[in-house]
Amino acid sequence: MAHELQLIKQSSGILIPATPETSDILQSKIKLGAVLVAEFRQVRNPAFHRRFFALLNLGFEYWEPTGGAISSNERKLVTGYAKFLAAFGGNEGALLDAAERYLEQVASRRITNGISLCKSFDAYRAWVIVESGHYDAIQLPDGTLRKHPRSIAFANMDETEFQQLYKAALDVLWRWVLSRAFKTQREAENAASQLMSFAG
Image (tube, rainbow, N blue to C red; front, side, top):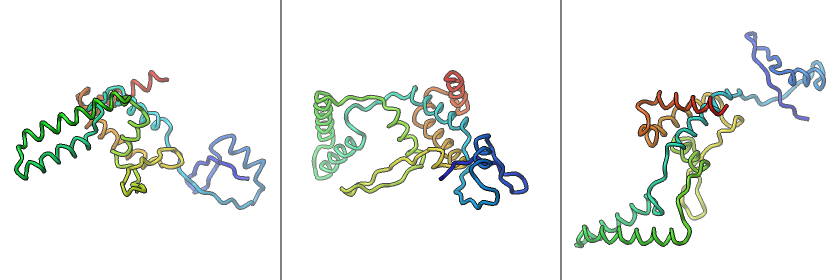
């Protein structure tokens, strides 16, 4: 039967129980001289994990969705096509105006059909992780690539990688959200710390 043990490495390289539960398992379930096979991972600092989520929550509070029911990629595609047509002799201003009116009609139809903007913390968190560079590129059956955020679960990300994610996430949130509300990154981190202390 598998047991999860929490151990502390001593200076001599010996591992000793870190918790009373681990000590109990070693004394009652494991015979003296038994050979154990284990996969080791370093436990991440739970306080740092809470700090990361406080930073995410701070950014989420200050972020307001904009742009309506038309994505930036859709807007780029339609306006790019209008410019492409203009290169063949059309009036660029008129074509861009027509493209904008078309996008407004599509947005209006989408809103009428029940599409509305809403803030989703899960989608926001996934976006921050992807923008921070912690993702896997996945190819879908239609050939498109999608960036899928890597798990930040304690078992899937060690302390060093998590610290890198935190720094990258702070940079992303600073660039896109927090720089509009705070003078420095340090000020934003302090606000996140205060938010964390209010949360308990």
